Length: 45
Length: 434
View 1 (cartoon, chains in turn orange, green):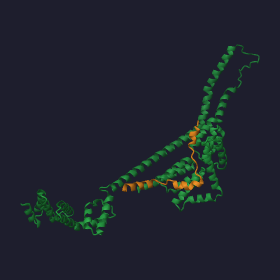
View 2: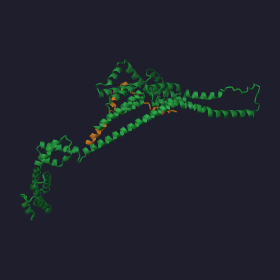
View 3: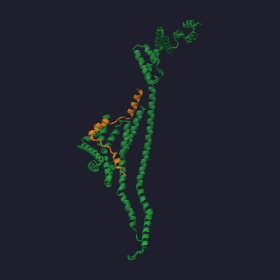
View 4: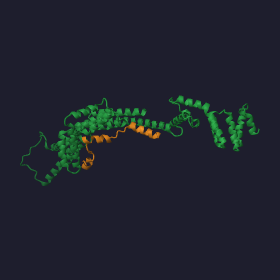
């Protein structure tokens, strides 16, 4: 049987249209190439 | 460079997987692999646009807009995202409707957390009528119905959810619970009941007249007990296997399909793990070669830095600094073709003009009574031009001046033995005393 409270925790709020701009600015766009570049910079310095 | 190419390739592999899953309507699976694709290459525009499309399909319009806007920012030209955004904007009232749906869903979630399940159900019911493809709303409504033991309605919501996303794990799990608690169990119970209620008359059956009765009480009880035992035996040997077989055959096809899917997924996982291993190995290789290049003592980059400093000293006509830097530079590693000509020119110039500068510096040190420094400069001069007999003689004199006769005699001896014809041979003999 289902544990209602536990199941409810799986549900996250949806993104409202008015919050799209904020969501975009907070989006983490780091990819593997960025990570590699960062690593190389740290090594050089 | 290789690592970047591998990242792009991995990104493309994940994108292709995401596309295949989306085509099969495995939207949850598609979202996961498309996110992986973007982790390897954020400029994989097709993956981002497809992710947006899937979000739109499951009713997450805000998330879809976010992905398409980001896509357009990363690639302004020839981007489908522009077309998608245009379509949404041109659809009158659609964005408002989607926004309202998201707000209602969030409000329902809040009600559900606050134990106002009835309000949550009311709000969700109206919302899914307007947007039946809003997956999360259908799932939450199903959960609330299950909580209220309204399994039939829950089943309808889950059916809608699985129409949108065929393999949605949450919907499948809830559907299992619903099936356990609805009609299906009723059907099974009815089948068991019918096993006892119908029996065909045989030729040798005797029809007892109603007046005939079994009169003894104990026999009645025994008959009842025998009937019960017989019933249990019949169920065990006849009904249960039939029920089991029909259930097994019904689900056999589904089980086979699921096993094939699991097998396929396992193969895909193996392939991805291999690719991840290759990527990790390539990364490690890149890190190692970079570590070699930047290591402080003999690294290539530090040698290039020396070369730059030498050139700066030349430009400032500071030959003394240039020659000392030259001695600290390992020219053997400066051979990648980029600055070969410059390195060769520096070496040639130093061979011709560098050693006299060091000899001059040594002479100045002697004048300042700093024999140790003078010897150091003379030695460095010899590393550039080892056949400068004058410098050899000066080293001998310097050692003699500090009282280190043994060292001095070695240098004088070197002149006498190896350069007997030179102008310094006689002086060396004199200094040595023999």
